[in-house]
Image (cartoon, rainbow, N blue to C red; front, side):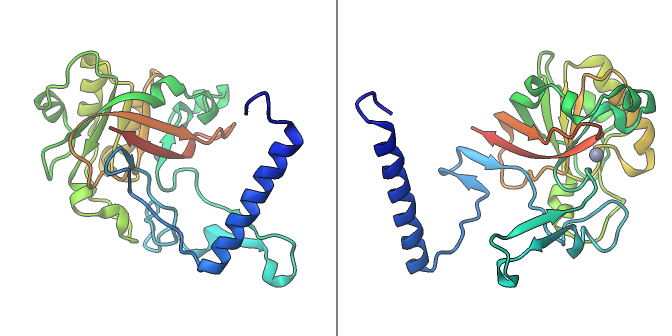
Length: 258
Ligand SMILES: [Zn+2]
């Protein structure tokens, strides 16, 4: 706003333009636009939509219809529509905090509000891992990720199989094995790991693998990322989890900018 515009006039102009755009929308019978990619590839939305059909941990029913409900409805006389949600904090695209697998960290308050936004935002490498293999020490070594790389998104066969688009939980998903996690901690500078199913750790070794990654409280796992349709390479990653004080996980929106 320039100094010559006086404030009430500015407010009136905004109000008029808003009301005219609302009127225009009504007359056009508008449809919402839902995007995966913006501006011909500049922004990739790598978050999954929260729908009743997305898979949930060890469930055959998915997230289910009850996670979101219209608590106040204009059709029932309320002056506004107001929805409520109830869901595990590890649903859909989300982050884990150190308290997820370390009870002492949970008690000490290492929750999602304590996560470092400088780790969650910055240059990130998207890599393809060998298919139909879990991420072992050997696989980690074969990826030749250079020292200094701080954020890596690992695309696995989970993306090829579209597991996040299947309602039924699939425990055969690909993820980190404990030795792969140890190798990462000991031999890389990676502080953010992104995977493409509900857990970054393979099902059979999930607790031990989580503990290895979360022990130092300096690595943030981002789980259930939507990595299809994005080319391998370096991007600017932006993840902004909800500030859930006391929670060891939080839904997050993540985008890549080329
Ligand atoms: Zn989680």
